[in-house]
Image 1 (tube, rainbow, N blue to C red):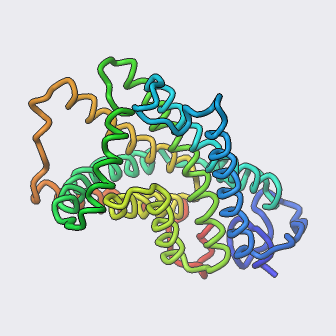
Image 2: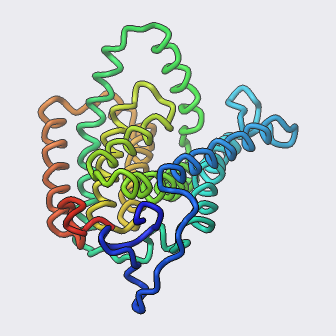
Image 3: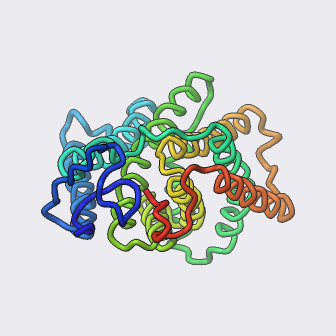
Length: 313
């Protein structure tokens, strides 16, 4: 029966922690597997709505690149709108209709210890040293010409969107490309897909890995799949250990924001453009990231010890 009930706390205890009188929650009509596919179907439906909107004359700026003749901020807000429509709306609709806890499903009410939040942010930031080297190595070792051409075209599109001649451009991008994606994607991937997988499969490591793969694939960037996968693993474990989506918002935003700050600094200091972390610095970045993730685990309220321990959600 617990497969058809969303419950917070121990999987052996089908009553939410916020329900002191232990009133049984209402059973759902579908198991977590069906509800997972429903969430993905909501994403596809919202994506189709966005595509149809972009075909209308008033909304052609949603899909127009630099050649479309629109101001660059149209493209930036178009990306933010994509995140809101395709990730946030499906998650909000799903949470409001199906889970017993409604919006508490997102685990935003759960407090995160400040020291744990600092460890999580430190882990995601230092990991960039290793991830940047990994990305450069992957790009240098891709020999398929079609893939290289597709990646180059994608980079050209982003070069237009991420150009920051003025500080105001950085501020706008921090909102449209760091803050909005951090909220929308975490609502969909960690609060949505990962929780449903956890409820369905009850195998924490497998569920976190599947969510990280999905997170990487949904970014539609072939060369950066390993980067997004590793970042997704860190975000998945942070959510699993703390039981709160607050830390994911912080880590995801800081990850995006640090990339934007780096691009802004390089654009205004061309001498730094050719600097790349070497293998030693990259390995040190990964090692420090692993250390901070371990410290996050040790300082979390709900450390991952397996389903039987009752510490998962």
